[in-house]
Image (cartoon, rainbow, N blue to C red; front, side, top):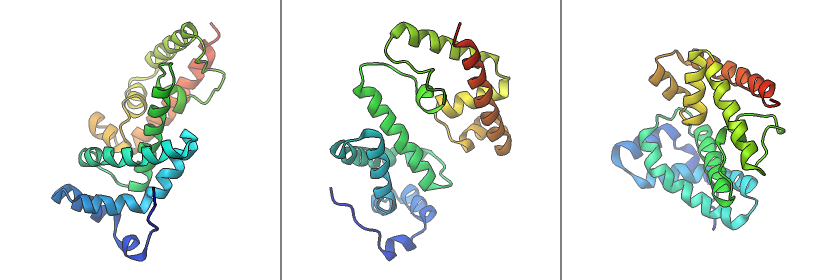
Length: 192
């Protein structure tokens, strides 16, 4: 795979304008131009997660294919950040498919306590998922709903705000506080 170096002409084109052109005209050229600006970063993230150059090159192409449909349905304010999250999620899903174990993304991206995640034993994993589910139920409704939409359903802040009707700043606060409260509850109950 040969990455095209960013040139001044590509850099000059605004991300929002390229997204708008892609959405309004189904212009794959606009999407290609947009993706090309960040393809080297996507490859770097893939290589970091997948630890294999060929798998990372394949992932770069698969992520572009995902963009074709996902960019049509998502309102993206900051394409670079949104693409990073999409790339990370793609890599985590690829790693899960490679392993024989079924995991929940919240284990990998949400709970920072490394002692919590033991993928060796199904029984232990099941118990810990049960603890997590019980802890989710203890969160205040706003936090529980916001955390569920953001982490488990992989919605962006704007989508969470649109779905719940909460203000954007409130959504961010509910997610941050919910994450902290969930982590405390899981750590407290994981020994039982």
